Amino acid sequence: MSSIYKNNQAKTDLMNLYDKKLKDLQIDFTNIDIDTKFGRTRVVKAGNCTGKKIVMFHGYNAGAPITLEAIKGILDKYCFYVIETIGQATKSAESIINIKDDSFALWVDEALEKLEIQKANVIGISYGAFIVEKTIIYKPQRIEKCILVVPSGIVNGNLWESITKLTFPLIRWKITKKEKHLKSFLSAFVPIENAFLYQMLSVIMKGVKLDTRIPKLLKSKEVKNFTAPIYIIAAKNDIYFPGEKIARRCKELFSNLKEIHLLENSKHMPSKFTYPIIQQKIMEWIN
Image 1: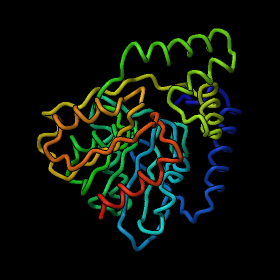
Image 2: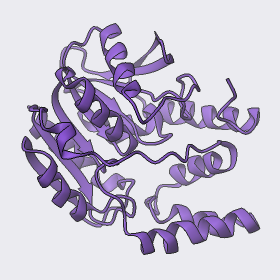
Image 3: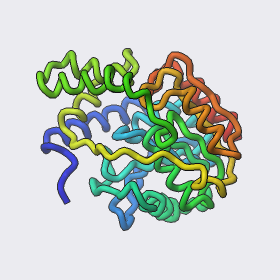
Image 4: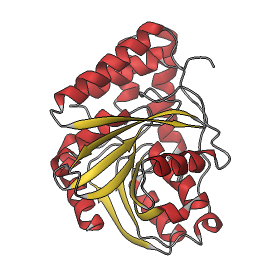
């Protein structure tokens, strides 16, 4: 198996950033390593052990520390399990999972079985929402309630806006290696005030072999038998998955859709200013 990292230094730098962020959160947590047929899977458990269990799937290459930061304010109320995606810049194995078949759902199923969680309240963020969608299709019985945050696999972004704000700056950076072009690319979806995200994503862009496979959009026939309550948080200024477009499509897709909340003035990666809103919505919906 080849590494997802371009060199050992990139992996070291990213894991150091991972550890620093987790330490800076100043929370109690437990690392759980699960062996699955797809590879070793890291689960970070945090929060109130006697509270309702919530299983979280993070965004692309984001990992547990960034995910837990967004819900830190409600850790005292719930028991969170952040399952780190295999094949991404996390503490899980680097093996690549097939995105076209039921592999992700089988991986989730095995992880939940070994965590002794029969039916879960799940939250999927960005790429993590795609993993939840695979579970909806192939293992719907595993889901009690479902919250999708800035979800992939529902709609595509505006083509011209993506070209001008993402593709062109990325090409300029790859040709010139100038930091201003990389920052221009990142600023399309990262909150301007979040210096840590810029630092982490800069290392990822330079040192990780990025997975360019694009998840297929969810189809109505794939979710017609899914009956568990589903809730959506989308961002109005999301360049990847525009909030209002997400809202329209979700109303068409899910007969069991309970509520959609649109984050105002928010890019794809939500600002820290939106964390209290996200936490409030999770509490309302889970309770």
